[in-house]
Amino acid sequence: MKTQIIKEFHVPAPIAQVWKSLADPTDVVTCVPGASITEKVDDANYKGAVVTKFGPIKASYTGDIEIVELDEANSQMTLKGRGLDSKGKGSADLLMVGKLTGKDGGTHVNFSMDITIIGMLAQFGSRLINDVSDQLLNQFVDNFKAKLASSAPAPAPVAAAASSAPVTISDTNTSTAGGSDASVTVQEVAPVESAAAKQDDNALDASALAGTVAKSVFGSIIDFFKRLFGGKS
Image 1 (spheres, rainbow, N blue to C red):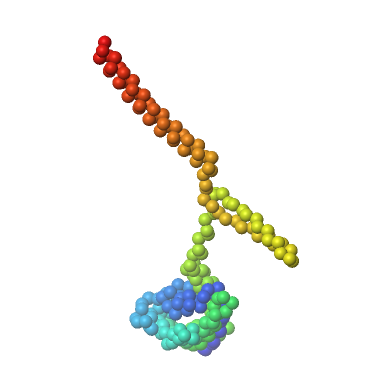
Image 2 (tube, rainbow, N blue to C red; image 1 turned 90 degrees about the vertical axis):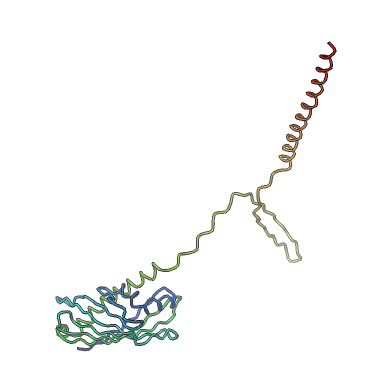
C-alpha cells in the first residue's frame, strides 16, 4: 500500500533556528510522538524506533534513517527511512522532502511524505493510515512549536525605574513671525546641596576649629601664670 501525505505549517521563529532543529534528527525526534533515536551511525545515518497505534493495532518499528540531502542555502532537506515491524509482520518505507521559507517574521514549513507499507497494516488502507498520520503530525507540530518557544532567547531586561533624583524642567519660548514654538527640556540631575546648607556647614566647621584653638591658647596662658605665681610664693 502506498500513500502520500502533504503537510504545511507556520512557526513564529526565524528560519535559521527552525532549520537547525529540523536538520538534527537527535533534536527533532523529541517532538515526534512515540519515536526515538537509538544510535547515531554517522552524520547522515541513524538508527531509531517508533511505536504507534493504527486503529486496534499497536505497531512497533525499528529501522534506519538516512539524511539524503541537507541544502541549507535553499533551506531544503530530503530524508529516507525504513522500518521493520518488531514482530516480523511487515515493513514501512518513507521518503520525506521538506522546504522552509521565511514568511511574516517567522518560518513556513512545507513537506511531503511518500509512504509504502507492507504487511498487516496495509489491510487498513490509505485512509486510516492518513488519518492516524495526520493526528501524529499535528501533535508533532504542537510539540515542535513549544520546543522552539522554550529555547528562544530571553527578552532583554526591563530598564530600571527612574531614580528619585530631582528633575529640572526648563520652558523655552521662541517667537517667530508665524507664531511661537514652546519646547520643554527635561533633564535629570544629581542632588545638589544648597548654598545655604554649605555655608552653614562651613560656619560650623570654622566655629569648632576656632573654639579648639582658643581653648588651647587660653589653657597655655593660665598654666604659665600658675607656674609664675606659684614659684614666687
